[in-house]
Length: 259
Image 1 (cartoon, rainbow, N blue to C red):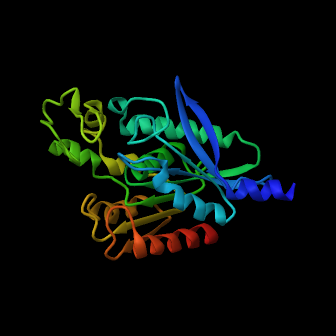
Image 2 (image 1 turned 180 degrees about the vertical axis):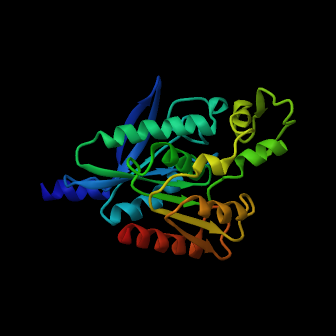
C-alpha cells in the first residue's frame, strides 16, 4: 500500500471528462488516498498542458492534487477533442467548468483552486468570478491575457490581423487555424468586468518586460480582487523562464502554504 501511494504521488495519471460531446483530456499529479485540495492548471493560447507541468509538480510536492489539461482546440499539440477554429475564450471557460465539475466529484477532494497562465489566466479569472469563492478556494494568475478584448478591437491578435468591423470567418491558418468567433466572442467585452467580484485569496504575478501582455493590465486588475497578493517579476517576460520562473515559484509556494 505504501509503495502504491508513493508511486501515485510521483507519477502523472491520465484523466478525462466530457464537455458535451467533446472529451477533455489531462493528467493528475500528487494523487494519494488522503483528503486533498485540488489545483487545476490552465495553459495559454497556442500552448498545451505540458507548459504548466512544472508548476503542477511544484504544487503536488506541497501536498495538493494538481490537474493539468488541454483546452479543446486550444493550442498546438493538444490531446483534447475539438477544432482550433471553434475555440474562443468562452469555450475555454466551458472546458474549465467541465473539469471543475469532474474534479469536485472525486472522492477525497476537499476544495478546488485555479491557476492560469496568459489566456488560461483570463479564463481562470472569468470562471472564478462566475462560480465564486464558495466553489473556487483560491485563484493564481500568471501574466493573465486581459488584453484579448482590446486586441480584438484593434484587429490584431498575436500574428492574426483583420478588419474588426468585418471579422472574417477564419482569422488565419498559421501557426494554427483560428476562427472569427475567437474575436467576436470578446470584441465587446470589458475584461475587468468579467473578473471583478471574485472574493477569494488571489495571487497575481506579471513580468515587467512582458511584450505580449502589457503589465498595465495586471496593475489595474489587482484592484478587482479584494484579497489580492500582487508581485511584479522585474525583467520577466511573457512566460517566465530561468530565474524569473524560480522567483514565481517561490511566490506560488508561499501563497499555497500561507493561505
